[in-house]
Amino acid sequence: MAKLVHVAGVALIKISSGGGAYQDLGYTRNGADITYEGFFLDVPGDQYGGDEGPPIEVQFLGEIARVRLELTKFDMTVADLVHARAAGNGAGDANIAGPGTLLLANAVATRSMDLLIHTALFPVHFPVAIARQPIEINKATKFSTFVCEFECHREQTTGVLWDRLTGQH
Image 1 (cartoon, rainbow, N blue to C red):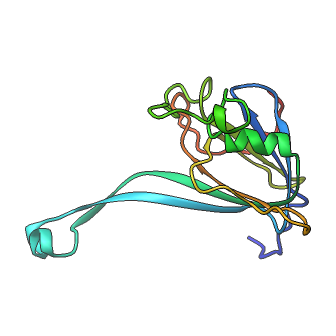
Image 2 (tube, rainbow, N blue to C red):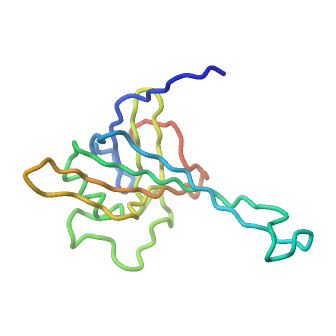
């Protein structure tokens, strides 16, 4: 396979909150950073010293993705929906998800968001995304930057963590 420089193209970040149509969140400063994190379980065995020794086998348990966005051109109304943390909530402090809210239960139809990094060549779509990490925005005479990080999980029905779909809901 050829070794090439890859350029996905300008990335428009879109979200869908609660199964509705995509809304344009905006454009990032330097692209969307995607980190895929695997989960593993060590299997101890007497062959290598039991619990204190190295594993005799390693089990793969699944994977999530973290998407970090630093946006310098964005829609504040859509950013407020991200800040609400759960799909179906409105914008503003009074509408942030309450304690005990389940975010993955029936994820596609209810509380997680749908995140699309829409590029010309290599779009990435995460059907189950949660704004789990701190959300930052600066307010001053300088331009505002909206920083958020989504934790993306497998869709419970299909098992899909990500795909290349870009179609509208």
